[in-house]
Image (cartoon, rainbow, N blue to C red; front, side):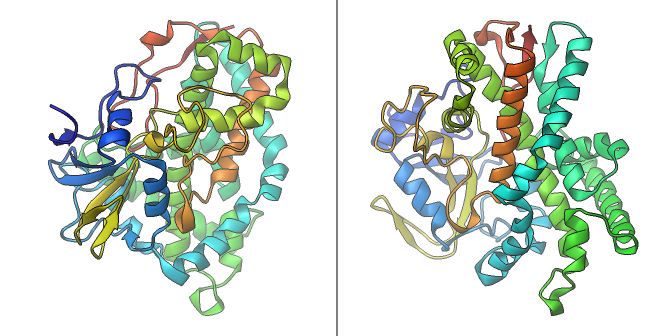
Length: 403
């Protein structure tokens, strides 16, 4: 039976941790607008072609209103980071959303990221030293990938170092689609919310040089700033969005570059390739997680297929990033590929606000590893790497390495 005639279960499982499901190429070729069944049992429409995914992500008719009564539930329990109440506090579209992005986006400019680089490098060096002290084999994901982004975002938000590990746990529960039960997720959300309320009250009394203090200083909605609740949810949202995605990407990026020794050797020989290598691993990440769900408020046509109002569309950026019509030799890893207009960070008005931060973290991690651990290698065959199930964002269970 071809992919056109069946309703695929989504997410589509892959045989190997770093490889895409075979169905992606078939869907792009024959069924770019496919019917799929989500973990909740609800129906959705899956897009896999570059042009379609890019168009839908930039089209304001495709909204993030996943709480609408006829929107598909992503998981059986509903909930999850995509459809929680949190998602409704930050304006979702239009001028209000752009205003929010301008206020928060000042903290994510390339200039700010350059200023953060030295402290990021120090954090990465300390974490690598701790991993080495623990002896080989180490787990690169647990030792470096998981803590680094949370430590960086805590620094940006002005969170004390001793509270970082609680942040890691909250982030993990908020982004999990199946690993934690509803009660545990709700308890974590409540604890996180309370912590952020107290943190904000402290910043109001004694401002620091951090993002939360700056958002408070901008004044309330009357002065063109944000409400306390919006500032609080912004802080939570940045942690959740910036932690798990980058934590997992660090492990996947290093695994992809070590999977074939020649790739690592190329980077050792020419560290100037780090920037394009990071972009290429982002493009070729076959395990990026759920994709971006969008809800359709009015009937629309995509690739010649009419989608009725109320359709929930899932955009697979990872499938689109392997589209031969958009990238030459799309299945091949080319560490020099430039330009590289991949969709790993989305597209349009809702493209990832923190992409400069993620890129900087990934580049710094590579710089530090190449410098400190040039003999780094995977401690297991690449076939033995295992995917994490149940996260909104894809990742590897562990990344065993030696040096």
